[in-house]
Length: 268
Image (cartoon, rainbow, N blue to C red; front, side, top):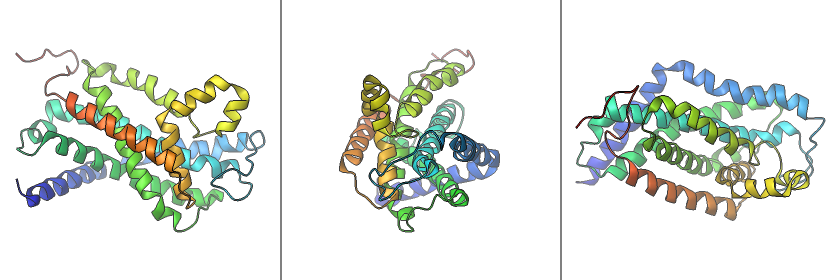
């Protein structure tokens, strides 16, 4: 296979994902409603309770809205990645992925390209959210919008690979949503997305250590530091390592016809 073949496949998968997104505009609105509720409604209630002191990467005291904005960016990618993993498995059984996997191109390349395509769509929604966050005075440095891009891509790949890994081993997809609830909500709430880790440590040391071992915590910190033009090597290192491991496991375990849809029997 030549490099041109890989490039045409990459462009084709990216284009198809954007066309699908364009045809499902309600997906765009629903993906923004949840983080905007946190930013506008919940933050108003927590603002008086959770004053945020001067902590890296911030150089001064900040509002609660400013603190949670990077965590809500991670929330958008988290929920979209899990929904994308579900649609990816449906495609594998009934749609385009079934045909795509017959390509002579290596399966890991096809799967990573698909994950990256879903991630690019999520990243577009993140940037729209950051623009809307300007209305509530969440104003990161201008160059931060560009500096945060690698962290967003890395986070989307990590969470997409996690969703694909879980979906691959679920035999009945009608159980997928229930399983995802046991993954999404603990991963989101037991992280630094909504509360600083030092506050977690004050409240419960064992919960603090759970947050430290949560890879989503480090993904959020990579987003937060990058958005404010600071470098966090530990956050990037852990997120990269987890991404590589999950991607290897997901691509190795992805097998055609593993999952049954709505109780249908598996072909012989």
